[in-house]
Length: 516
Image (tube, rainbow, N blue to C red; front, side, top):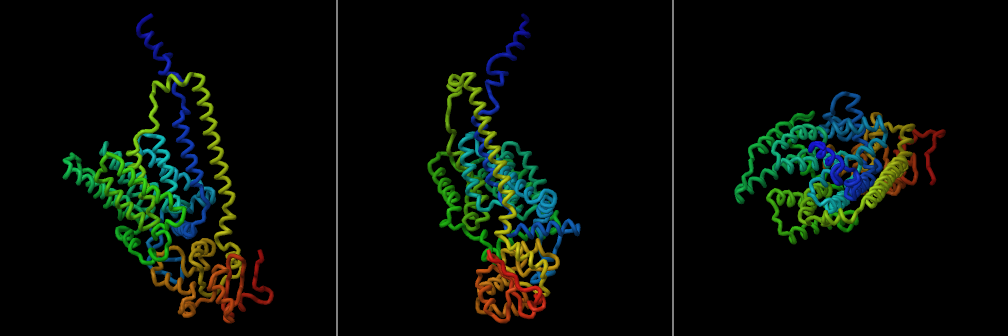
């Protein structure tokens, strides 16, 4: 037999080279990763219940209808016509189009996929130890869970994860840094979180410069510096122009944001939902202390900045997760260590076939679980929406629209915009950057019955109030003869001034009270 024929025959049939059973597709490692990310997808499938998602949807609808991005506030009467930086305009348009075409099921599934993709990229940055990387990725996902949901910040989480992935790979292949340019152009139109990507690039450059100076490392800095400058030049390519340079800093300095928005506050470690984050912080310092691997300057800078940011603001916890998890993984080594020769001797062809079938069954079961769980979440959407937001009170306002200004509960402002705009405009909603501290203080004082609460209602000419039924304001107005209950259920109460209620509620239309 000719040598070439023998070689061809050998290469085709030699055990361990071309056979499928020697290296099955469903290995234990691949099964582990499939279960991990299918589980993360199922965890990330959450109901649409964020108070802000409603005004995001209405903004997308506004942009689609007017073919332009609003620059002044159209939704409230307290800030009507005042400047508004709609920095999330492209995300909002996408939210509206997904909801319009696929309903809330589409939003739930798309954002679950976005979150999963962010943690897949995190896993890819964690080194070769698949099991350690997988477990730490899951831990990081649990630490970041308080900020999950159908919300624009999730898109910034994905883009931050992608940005870090690009910059780390660019240390071996410098040309990859060019991919930050299209990413910047997209990100600056999706969310103001683009500033985090710019800041990460600056910290990478500072770290590389430090290595070059103190460790004599031969880093070529001209390319990342040039691309960083081009990234900055791309920032104004958005409907708000140069304003996007200052807007992220205005948000960080906003007193209203820091004072009234819970996610801008520090994490409360008395609450169990923040314990995975606290444990990750502790594990990071333990791993650094026990490892002989030195921490590179750019890793140190990113770790310190992200730790400070996450301890100051809950919203920044995912930033720390994306930095800390790969650092910890690289210091834990490779586990479990299995001798390849031992693995080959231990598994016969029959055992491999059984293991493959078993792994297929596990993955199939996990797929079914993810599908069933996601379906249950989607089916619960209407119930969750009605329990969280005043759907029945809004239905009453559809048929009994108030003729004058309405004072509304803060968390319900976005829902009222989605359901009742344009006929009705709100007192306040989740756009803290639009309202500023003065209007937030007016809301807090009136809602909390501070000394000047009646003067606040008079100054804004309030004729209708929509607040939770168990609130202090609802209790006080029920006892005031100048106000009448127009609608009430266990969740929400609508009160109107006596003249307004007499005009709206004729004897044929008495006040509605639902008993549940």
